[in-house]
Image 1 (cartoon, each protein chain N blue to C red):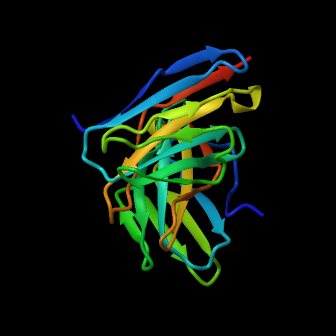
Image 2 (cartoon, helix red, strand yellow):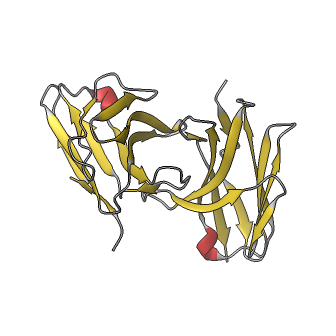
Length: 109
Length: 112
């Protein structure tokens, strides 16, 4: 079983739609959680950290459920520029980052 | 400008011909790391370094070497490349105690 699992997609949605991505992780000792964004053939960049109480950054909302070892990312009012691959990242305590394989999103006009 | 640079960006080589991919960061970060990215597998860590002269294996270190003689540089060495090392490679750095990693632009390596 992979340490971090994501639905690979692709998710194809129209502009303005709301889309949600899910991610599960296997290491219950994991302490830190993130969503990174990766544009085609480019380097990953931090989108947002995920906090226990859930957090929001503009149109993006991240949730964490430790009991179920589950992380989610919700994107509201999708823009064409949101088209990218979204990587779920988990950081076990005193260990390095574990990346999911990514979920690909395409937002269409 | 704060950045991580990698060279070369693209490389096609033949089996067995030694190569080095350079990585340099100008943010005075202690932590540096190399990843490879393959379709369906995500980013997998090859080697990492917590500071100068301190390196350790990641999940997929076989066939790779690294060194950290200076804080800013962390080269990745393939002594005898094989076709299964064809991949997209990323170098990353971060500051000690901070979670965000900054990635280089990537090196696309093809071994024939």
